[in-house]
Image (cartoon, rainbow, N blue to C red; front, side, top):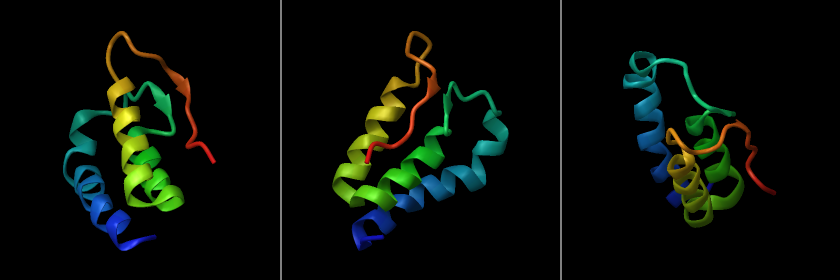
Length: 73
């Protein structure tokens, strides 16, 4: 993982440690957004992985999609 991706993964880890258990387990996508974000950062680095994670979070809304949404290669 690149240094930028590592720094960008800190908020995701913080969310998972602090808020994830309290928000509930009702994610519309598989894998969950936090897992997707970490995988995107690992695969694509900080810039592209961060962009993919933001796009995914943007799709997570009541009128958005659902289902299986894996990180592209």
